Image (cartoon, rainbow over all chains, first blue to last red; front, side, top):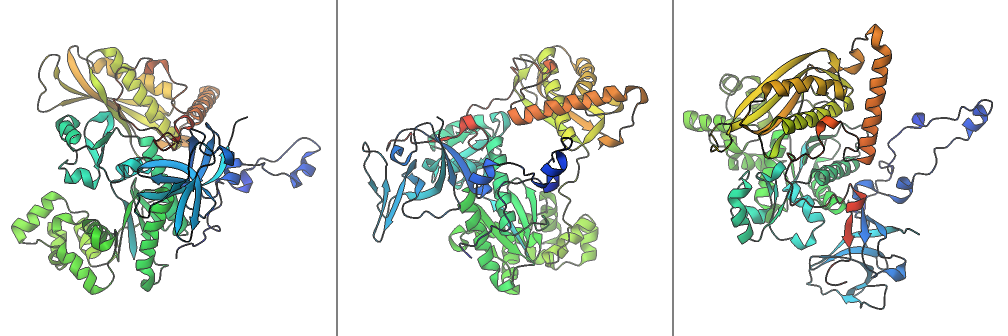
Amino acid sequence: MNGEIYSASFTGTKHFKQQQVKTADATGFGAAADDYSERGIDLNEQLIRNKPATFFMRVAGDSMQGAGIFSGDIVIVDRSMRAESGKVIMATLNGEMLIRRFEETFNKVRLLPETKNLSPIDIDPYADFSVWGVVTYVIHSL
Amino acid sequence: MYAIVDCNSFYCSCERVFRPDLKERGIVVLSNNDGCVISRTEEAKKAGIGMAVPYYQCREQLEKAGITVFSSNYYLYGDMSRRVMDTLRVIANDSNEDRVEVYSVDEAFIELSHIPPENLNDYAIHLKNTVEQWTGVRVSVGVGPSRVLSKMANRLAKKRPGITNGVLVLQSDQQIREALEETEVSDIWGIGYRYAVKLRDEFGIRSAWQLKHIPLEWARKNLGGVVGVRLIKELCGETMREKKDPLEKKKMIATTRMFGAPVYTLEPLREAIATYTARAAEKLRRQYSAASSLDVFVVTNGSKGKPYQYQPGTDHRYFNLPRPSSVTHELIAHAMPLVTSLYREGVKYLKAGVILGGIVPDNSVQADLFSAEQQKNKTALMDVMDNLNFSMRGDVIRYGATGTTRHWTMRQDKRSPRYTTRWEELFEVGKGKVD
């Protein structure tokens, strides 16, 4: 049952029906515009795949700057995604929360920073380690 | 068949999602106003911290045992509860919203007629794993032929975590019999302490298995009529209670809080009542209703300088509105004279509250011919206020009567950040020792 896909029953963050979208009623233009009316882009819908499992977090420090994630940025974290090698993840290690690139090879798990100032962490098989969630997007203010 | 999904020490479990350092360490959460312990992890239970024990009585014990104390963070718990329930709705494919019955903030029943009997165990495990994966909140799952039996399964699952892994399905006659024999009458969902004592002392009924076999007529006579009969039938595996309508409108709305510190003067009392009235009016408008009566009450305990009495006293004043209303300032205007008439100098006030009654749908409020326009303006004003307060949060717009200093508000010294509902309070990653 693991890995089941729920996409049909879960439609992002939409909480309204098509009837609730107000149509254009500018005189003379209304009818034509109506046929092409759409309700615009909703970032929640674009960036959140699974709402109950999605969390926002703020990044402090430069550990991931090589991946384009800077101090003060907001990351979107999805707990329902499987951590695959190469993904940026939120990890817990010895009671601490870390953002790193996840690397899984046949005999080793490593957490890689994206800065020269920090070194990769080899995960001991007996360490108190878990994947908290997978980072899906970063929001960076310019 | 029914499943109940029940969060383990829910409030503590929510705190742990953002505190991996506390994964295997004791946590307690205190009630409003940091009054007493309302949620405990297993570690805290083992350290001898009781449920509902006043904080000041167990403070030292908590410190010695290294248990982390949190003030209640209902913003966080409310959001995490919604996530848990949404997850269950997705798994149960509940697009008609009739399979998942949210029973309380931390538990929900799921109707399982769509699951083949041979898959029930796998399904229950899947429920648990998915909720924990998606939300981080720990849960236990009990499955049985009726709600009472699923509750019983859940209780046993929690009692024997090593064997059950937090999941127990009562399916075969043998499994159900063993569970019933193992469960004492007092541990059955829906049996109060008094009935349990009565059944044990007067009739020698100790186990759920014994109770199951009493005649229905006897239950009707000795176990509170229809309620008792239902319970026995549920124990036999018949489902009795109809699902309640989740959108059922409340017939009464009460808002009440303990004060952060005792209050002796009229002004803070009036501010508090105005604040609670505003909050209650907001709830009223959220369900499109209006109230026709207003009850203001205060809880007192002796007077200044005197020791606490054993029994606190309650005073209240009641008012029937000339016509039902949901307009905050109308309700406050009616509440203020009640507070003034209740107030006695020198008395120590611990708590106050407002109860709105006689609730009717707001479209049934009789239109007053001469004030139709005025009524429309009031409704528009309330809409604007509710919208602003909902989108900006923290009551950006409020009435002057509700006070500006608010010395009487609750103590919440140890509340965690509102990680999931406030942009300014998001969890910050990368502040640990490693980085």
